[in-house]
Image 1 (spheres, rainbow, N blue to C red):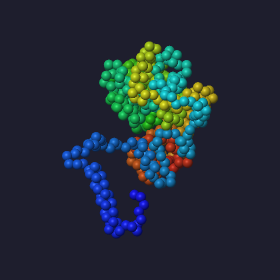
Image 2 (cartoon, rainbow, N blue to C red):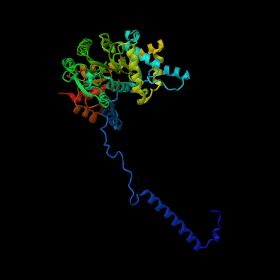
Image 3 (tube, rainbow, N blue to C red):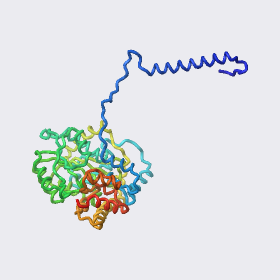
Image 4 (cartoon, one colour):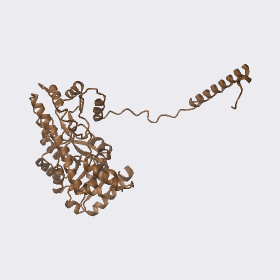
Length: 451
C-alpha cells in the first residue's frame, strides 16, 4: 500500500515479499476449499427431490419441437391449437385492438378484481352462453365466475363437484367421450375423480358412434356426471346432430345424470354463436341444471389472457347465494382473483353494439377460413386422383380434423415431408393455408395410396 520506490527495494526483499503474497494466496484457497468440503463428522444436507423422475413429454408440444428443429423449406406444423391467418401468422381481432385502445385511453387502474372476477365480464359471459333474454338469468338462477380460461373453469368446476356432489355420487366418477381433450383426464383425476368413458368416435366411419354414444350414456349408473363438448369436439371435430343431442338429453334426464358442458369454440366452429351453443340451450330447455366451462381463447383470440368463466345452473335465488359463497371459498386459496385485462376487453366489446357486431363478423371470418381449408384439402386430394373417401374432412367442424391417418403414416409425413401432427392423425386446420394445402394433399395422397 502507498508508493514505494522500486530502486530502494533489494532483491532479497522482493523475493520475501513475493513469497509472503504467495503464502497468503495459498492459505485463502485452502480456507475456501475447507469451507466448501464437508468436514469429518459433518453430514451434507440431503436432496429432497432426488427421487423425482422425468415426466413424459407433452405430445402436442413435441410436435412443435420437431417442427422447430426441422430445416425443410416446406415444413408444416399441424399440431398447435391456435388460429393462424392465411399467411400463417397469429391473428388479433380488430375489435380487440379497438377495445384495448379504449381501455388504454380510459386510464384504468390495476386494482384487484373480486374473487369471482370483473362484474361486467361475468354478466357478458353468461349472456353469450344462455342468451340475453334467458329465463334463467331473469330468474337469478345462474352462478357465474370469471376464471383462468377453459382449463381453469374445468378445474374450479371439478373441485366444486368434488366437494358438493350429493351422496349418491360418492363414487366420484366422471364420464368423458372416447377420445376427449387430453387435459380433461388429468384435470378430473387431480381433482379426485375416476375418469370413465362413453363411446363416441367410430374409426371405421370417421364419424360419431351413435349407438355406442347413446348406449353408454344409458348404461352409466344413474346420477353420473356426463361431460359433453358443446361443439367442435376436440380432437375429432365430430359433433352429434341436433336429433342425436335430443336423444342424449332424454336419456340423461331419465337417468338423472348431471350434465357438464365444456364450451371452448362458441362462434368459432360454425361462425354462428347461437348455432354452436344449441346443445347447451336445448338441455336447459329440457330442465337440466347444467354446469358449463367457457373459454374465450379461440373465439376472441385471447389465448394468452387466460380469460374464461364457469357457470352453474341452480334451482332458485337462495340456492344461488349459497353456491356463490362456496365458489368464492374454493377460488380464494387457489388464485385469489383473476386478471382484469382480458375481462375488460370482452366486456368492452360485448357492451358496445358496434364492437359486438364486428366481433360476430370476425369470428365468422375465422370459422369460414377453417371451413375453406377443409374444402380445399378435399378438392386437392380428389384432383390428385385419390380414391379414398375424404368426405369426413368437410363433415367435421371446428379447428381440428381427425384425418383417419395411421400412426405409421403420420410418422412418414414427418420424416419424408416435414409435416408434423400428433400421431393419432389429428390435424389442426388452422395450420393450413392456401400456400401449403396442396403440399399436404400431395403428401397425404402418397402415404395413403393403395391403403
